[in-house]
Amino acid sequence: MSAGVDERATDTELACRFKRDPEEFHAVYDRYHRAVYLYVAGRLDVQAADDLAAETFLIAFGRRDRFDPERGELRPWLFGIATNLVARHRRKEAQHYRALARRPREQEIDSHENRVVTSVAAQRMQPQLALALTRLTRGERDVVLLMALAQLTHEEIAEALGISYGTVGSRLSRARKKLRPAIDKEAFHG
Picture 1 (cartoon, helix red, strand yellow):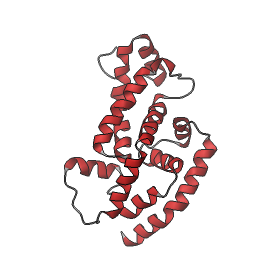
Picture 2 (picture 1 turned 60 degrees about the vertical axis):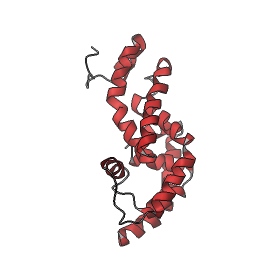
Picture 3 (picture 1 turned 90 degrees about the vertical axis):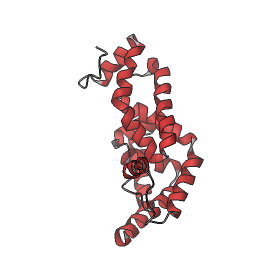
C-alpha cells in the first residue's frame, strides 16, 4: 500500500504502518512536509526552511517508535519538533525580523521564491508587525506563529509545545495586547 499517500489513512493507521515497516514513513513525509516547510519558511527564511523541514522529518523518523497516537495526531507532533528546531535558530529569527522592520515598504521583492515566502508570512509582513513580533516572548511568538502560519488549533498548539490549553490562551491574549498597536497602526497607515 506504499504506492502513494492514502489520503483516507488516519494518523493512527500511518503510525501502525511505519512502526511495522520504516519504509512506510514516506507517507508521513508526503502528507505533512509542505505544511512544515511553509511554517518554518514563515518563521525564518527559505534556506533555513529547507534544512529545518528536512531535519524535522529526520528527527521524527528517528523517534517514530516513540510516537503514540493515543497522545495526539502526527501533525502537531511534527510541528512541535519543527518549533523546537526553530528555537535553536532564535538569534537568526530575531535578526530576520529586525531586518524586515528596517526594510522600506516600497522595496521590490527580488525573486519568485521570496514572493511565495512573503505571502506565506502574512502577505508582505509589514515592518511594524515584524518589529512587534521581536517584542513578544519566545512562548508568545511560538503560539502566535503556530496559529497564524501553521493554522493549528489551541489544542494542537498545546500538544505541539507541551503546554496546557490555558497557557496557550493566556500567551495568545498577552501577544494580542502587544501586537495590537502594530496592527492598529498598519490598519490606519497601510
